[in-house]
Length: 172
Image 1 (spheres, helix red, strand yellow):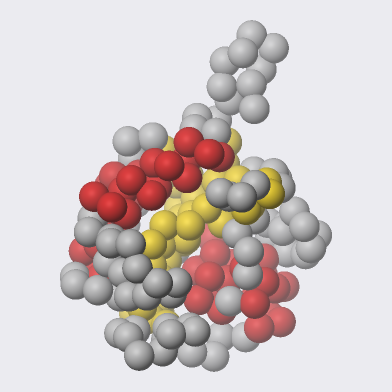
Image 2 (tube, helix red, strand yellow):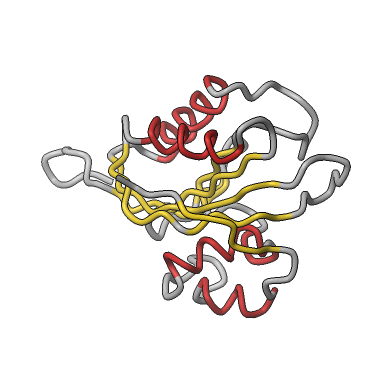
């Protein structure tokens, strides 16, 4: 991720954002504003309302995705995103618990990363309409680096059941 002189090169990343506590739309907007500290925001998808998965006894989510360029390497981007989550009120809890904000690294260029702390592409993308719907809106032709299938084709496989557009956020 560096040129021959060792200068970091910008990476195109796709992030997924979700919120189901408090001012959900406000939480998404605040997270995007904070991401600007280390990323140039490109396209922001529509906001989709989606039912929770796994733990269903919680409020519905608002989900979106965005493209951005960043000089942060994947581990640093993960730490930065998790710091934003904490700053916006996310508390440690059980898996799939309600949360004011969730920021996931969906894709990082064409990289495949598998460490105990980080998996890229984000696991489960291919089965989750709440991720694929907003992601395909901004990255329909992008090829998933593991399955070698276009994001739009993955969405066609799972369908749009349980997700609906409820608004837009501007990247300004």
